[in-house]
Length: 377
Image (cartoon, rainbow, N blue to C red):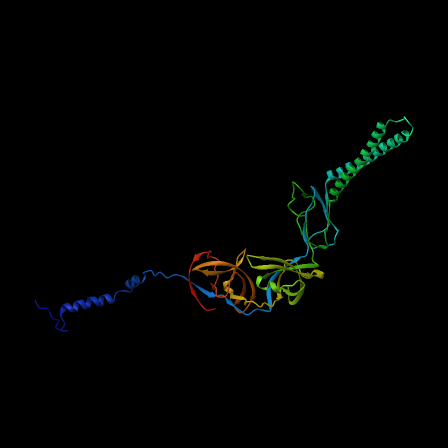
């Protein structure tokens, strides 16, 4: 049977039916298109990475430091007693040997009196035995008046009683030393920075023996401690001048001298602890202040390493960057140095060309496999 022909178009009816079906599929509703577009696409997160770069050696190294008092100590009681009186409080300037606190212990006072009475008793006993020996000795000069055994007995008794005086005196001095602990004096000239107890508190074994009564710090001489990276240890010389500044006095520079070098490199930071003594007459600077130290160096080795500031992050226990090794993020402990424009100088187990995360993330644990994309700095 021949196919029917549409009189207006001149096309076969069957062909028109097929074209209509195609047009109807192309003009489907927006909702239907959205349903088709909702097919999930597996797009993986890519972390931006950069290469560690090296710069020319510097002639002055900027390092953070902390001021500490030259001497500081907690003052604890040495005997079981009660706090009788406090003669110093927080902020008081005290001199070496100054009375700071008085304690009381009645049993110690009684022991001292008893020990003193034993000394006097021993002295009296020795006086008696010595007198007897002297009389026996004089009598023994008369032939047959005193037997040699009696003379030896009197002599031995006198010697024994003399040694009793020595023992009694030793015991008395030991008790006297314990009683002296009831007066707490300043071990050096400084400032009282803390007071924990009040009059009436029981101190010593069985009481609040773990709490110091007072804390004293020396202020007229301070220590500045800095960690110098291993790269620059060859430039450290005892007696070399060092300049530093503190936030409290932004427009003022202070100068000290390198006094001690620990001669030990810490493996976790690859740095060595250096101490700088600083005379502080008047107590202008305070222990605990952070300082920015400018250390003259002339390293002739490889250049310093720099990374973006965002690549360095700090936690409670360390400062680190995250190095990419075989597609996995690994934390590398570093120490920060100078800050340049958008860059931070770092010291640690890194080398130029290592790939690290451009922005460190504390949420990434060591050994986490990640997808990375190397970008320019």
